[in-house]
Amino acid sequence: MTATADLAIRTEALAKVFRRQRAVDGIDLAVPRGSVFGFLGPNGSGKTTTIRMLLGLSSATSGRIDLLGQPMPAARHTVLPRVGALVEGPASYPYLSGRANLHRFDAADPTSDPRSRKTRVDAALDRVGLTHAADKKAHAYSLGMKQRLGLANALLAPRDLLVLDEPTNGLDPQGTREVRNLIRSLADDGTTVFVSSHLLAEIEQVCTHAAVMRTGRLVAQGALDDLRAQGGRTITVRTPDVGHAGTVLIGLGLTPRRDAGADTLVADLPAETEPEAVTAALVHADVRVRGITVGGGTLEDLFVALTGDGFDVAA
Image (cartoon, rainbow, N blue to C red; front, side):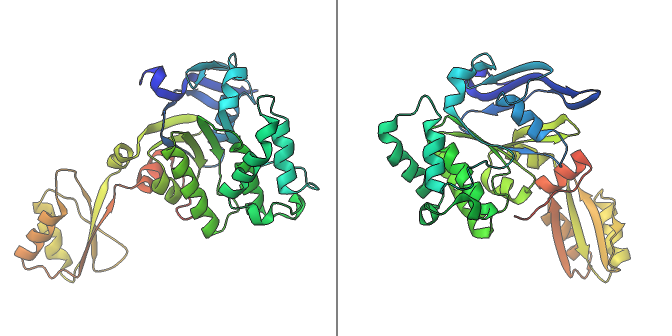
């Protein structure tokens, strides 16, 4: 495991038991500093329970947590002011404006400087695109606007670590893109961003590292490119010469199978076999090729294989 000093989040054998159910079952997380880390898994896999333990909102049954190199919850008073969070949907005072909500949230922080409060609130509203609605009552905000307000609250002070639970929930495509750009800009400034999500497309576009949960257990984690490499590739060949093409593929050491289409063969493609070599062999054998597609090697393929569950793949 990477040295603790190089990790923004580190857990050892972290577990949470509710009565007889092990919601989180001995996980070892390692989140590098400066990364955008995607925390993935189907609903009920233990993601939110883990986040609540990381932030001291729920006590662990057993195991160890280090945030920013300090043990939690023992060092919570020094660590948590350096951590911003948006968990399980943002809370707000419904009959206060967005701006007034942020002033109230900031005033509740004993480490905040009241002399610079207005400047920080205005900057946070601008960063999440809420300046135009800053004086509108929060109860009139859409779900997406409430998400933005929660993000603004998390950004009222400079943060070394930002923990976001489904940050694009309720956002339209434009808002989703803005949050994605915001996460990138925060990472560029040196903030570690820990993002829990079930939207694989979002994770692939913004994250550098990821981890996958299944029924309370951590089944994979690492750099995104390394995780993608674990996903198996397939090659799909469309041809009217299915029998002849199958013979060529078998000769290359592949095991072709019929797909749903009468003119389609699919085979697993080993890492050492280049798709160009398959194409050349088919053409050399005078197989009439209508199309060749290489698939797999994606997060979707890997995560479905690891969890046995489907993921949403579009924002």
